[in-house]
Image 1 (tube, one colour):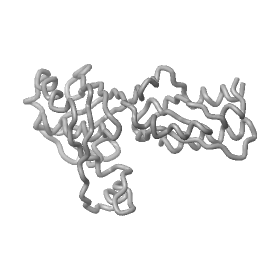
Image 2: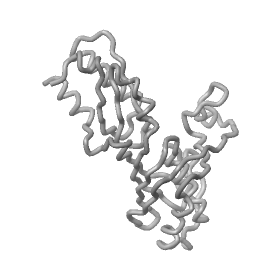
Image 3: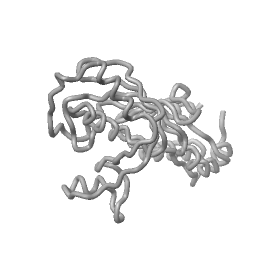
Length: 230
């Protein structure tokens, strides 16, 4: 059983983030629960890499002195699984916004889907989604997007180490991706749809690994709180 001193000295917590929680909400919840459990007035808690509310999976949470390691954890290779739905695009590239355009998919074959992944392997230029938390001129991009303002977004170089199709069910394409820091899987879904001369958006996402950390070793928020009280 861990003590207040253990959390202050620094812990790395592997949390399996549930759907519809922001990473910030998870950090706040765990910080509050640790403070309550040990009657601590103040403790540092932070996460090593944001997950969108519509994504589930591995969130690496650092406490106390381990928060100094956050940057090194953020820079590690990440693995995701998820689903790209072909035939339609959304402004946010995922299900945060409604489908705004539909496209034919009759020409898309399973062979074409598999072959198209090859275009995305290695170092590529990727444009982040306009619905993202990146800042431009002091404002987050999603603030411009939600206000209907057009803003120029610069591309960035990222690396896709693996892009594997695990299942195809009609227009739903299940995948596994291993990628560098700074990769937006939403943008990959959008670009993949374009490369297939159709449209595509991310309809499900789960982060499974960050470096050597694996979601299989993670716990739910509820389990973590229960263990705190034992």
